[in-house]
Image 1 (tube, rainbow, N blue to C red):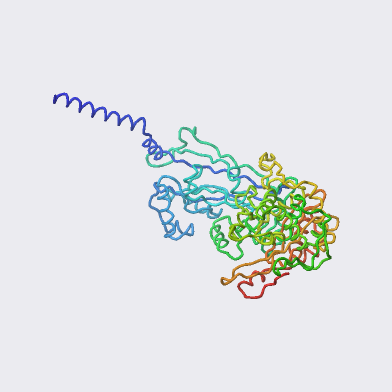
Image 2: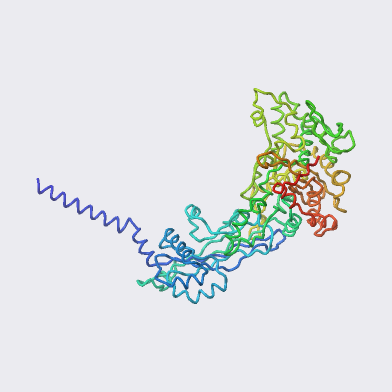
Length: 622
């Protein structure tokens, strides 16, 4: 029995050893990979990033050479740290931190020590690299901005973080990728494909040539060139007009949904986020919490839309059959309702029907129309939800789905919202409780791009394409169904006729008659929106926002535009002038209303923006 047990033990042990040898030599390849990593150095050949052109073929973004100092910690040999730090303008402490970080990332993989050397630094260091074993220089390309505007549209590139490296196997530590704007949204098109070289090393860790004659090596593939819908000249002009002001401009081509201009103010020169000072400059921009140059007001700022929103209530009133174009309403400097409350209005002739009601922006007219919409139904809840559904069909109160990653939905309230606010059913609420919606105040909030798209939809008499920036890739038109399918509203086309005429009369004999551009028929709408903030914990009313929307020409629209100027007093003062100038710039290419241009360029709102800090009084427009 003992002999049998001994044989069993010997056989079992032999099988265990053979199984382990089989696993180590055949199944487990980790040791082979470690051996290969010791004998083969992998070097990446970074491709040129794709160029970015504007809609007219103007080059906006190209590339420039850049050189990164890389390190493979495992290959480091003792070196003169004092000389090395002097060449790279580093302190020994900074170098030590960078090397420690590289070791934590991977002792065997390359990490960036100093990014983006200048040509002079590269030339000087290249001569001495033989003295610093374990370091090498990696050639890359940085962005070279051919324009000093459109930073919010274009975005920038920066080094990937560890989360990106963990989540995406394409990237390794030190790689660059697009951040914000077009650079981020179309990163996979623009970045290209890295080339890879495998270098054989001898037992002394010296390079001895391509591994297996380079059969595993690949060449880099240049990124794709893209054309965006932005008109660079119009964009530059918009940013010029918005100097010393805050707000946003969005211009859209109604027939295609292509974004012609997307201005946020204040902005910055995109070249500031290139090179070794990128981090320092970004920090300054990030911590400017007052002007907020990194905040894209065209996509993110949610404002009360003011009087341009009256066009929506006119359309809904016609569609719901609660008003026709001949119905008139009186205005005695406003609209009185419930317990002595009054919605004020400026002086104009009275009574008014729809077309002059729009042209003269009569608050009383639209208060009556709004009440009729809500009160058509048995309960205000049903009325509000019907009103809400019409507005949602214009893309309001939700993300438009444009091809930039950031955006806000705005707000179009519904019955659930008001039931919660008024604690229904404990307390009942009626149409007068939400009357400020009639004039684009109250709970209604829109972003500039939503307001521009709303205007483009009116220009198209009831339909729109989703706004977008990408126009062509490598010279080929995009075929993204998301941007080539018409979105139809719930409003019948014939109901747009009087609204368009009312907007046209805003320019011919209404609130924007002083802003006419000779030879261009424009339809527009002025707007003034109340503006509140909290100062020392107290809700304080600031100077009103200036708002304007327009499209032109009236019967063959080429451009639809929305302009918001924060603290701009009233609609025609700042926003109206800017919108008219932008329209003429796009359609004609030159400016004939130089009087308006001179006024805008010579007027600043910086003192207005300083008032919350200075304590000076605000101008409350009524």
